[in-house]
Image (cartoon, rainbow over all chains, first blue to last red; front, side, top):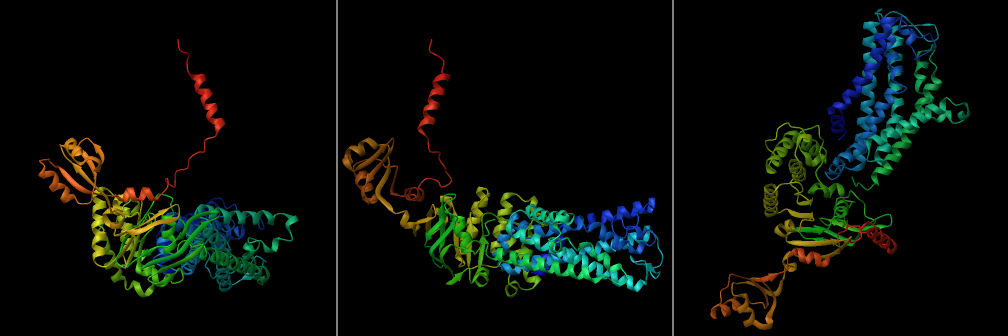
Length: 271
Length: 326
């Protein structure tokens, strides 16, 4: 069932269009940087953009940083929000359930497909970023040393390892969004409603993060530690926020998947 | 095959299905009749475990639903409230996906599945449809694809909700033949419909749902029992009427309705007196009459309760609009 759901997702032209669009923005940024050489000053603008002017290899991480705040969560929310509600709206949900496919099994398959989508998207964005960065922004051999965010020098092996961890961390950060959208997708028969609901949560979270009065809430907001993957490029790695981020996402995933399961397995399917 | 006991579904304060006791026997073609909104579809959804009953029990093949859903549903083919498919894929791809989703034990290898899908497509008349995506199908083609989905696993029981919706007369005839063929091969069919003619032509047993209650469940022949009258057509209507006197119940143009249960005897008697008979038959209750007698007004009709002051106001406006007579 999991393989079928993954096949269904990737046979949809829309899925590939989403991935292509996600790659388009970092590519555009790379082109603009290559033409103008006007990087943001260190500490301003998206993370790493100031660093990539000297070394294109880091652009894979910069690409993730560009799509992470908005584009990536939108894509994940759209796909996860559509996963159950889309079947309900098309009427195919009832035919799956009477085949029969157990409700828990269907939910697990949908969830796995969404997770595979998240992983694929993040890897494709990072890969595109790497290629585009190397082509457009300087092609020092990968073996050349890279300067860390802290100012010291990192070997290419260290950098490769850290990029891999960063990719995993960004993908994991998206699972919270996926779980929220999947839960809403079992509540609503409209995929759009579920996606927008999940985005509303994220936007709300981002707004509260800028508000000093919400200080007590901030450690629990889903977007709080998203950009902490930058800490992976400090020397030595600053693990604290990354670990907090993973823990927080795990709690969101567990709570919302539990809610999705409880709701979906006891729901009247009237669509 | 299907039995329910006091099956009830409430949505909030609204009781949609009320203590329904269905009894569908092995080998029936069961016609499940009811107006739009009478609770047919909700009942069908409960049978299939899509909607969970508020109270009461369902047994399919003697096993409790929805508890035994994973065992029982594989033996059932269903068409619920219209067909549905992924629009961007072909009919064949849709069937392959649907078939592959089922229990691992029952789905077999992919060559098995391809063969099975080819067979059902031929059966419903879509064998040559090729790679066209479902979004380019006509309503009738979608309906056929829906039936193909139901027939995929050679089910022992077919639960079909309005299976001829959207089909043209030829298509309806074809589907009827297909269902009769499947029935002859041993499939039990539960057909939910509001088309009385369709049920009358196909079914052996009938249940009628009226605003959530099962008002009758009987053999079709029982519902169509003779009324104890004979209908007679003749050019000599007036002569016959005078002859039969007060046995005549109704008279119109060239047609008489006469009390009596022996058409052959009446025929011989009249012909013996030199009267010409064009047509003579026992009067039977039509299914439509039987159903209309048993049910209330259409469930999707929501009449406004007229208020006295509104009527009065309407009267006044009408009067004001009317020009004075010259």
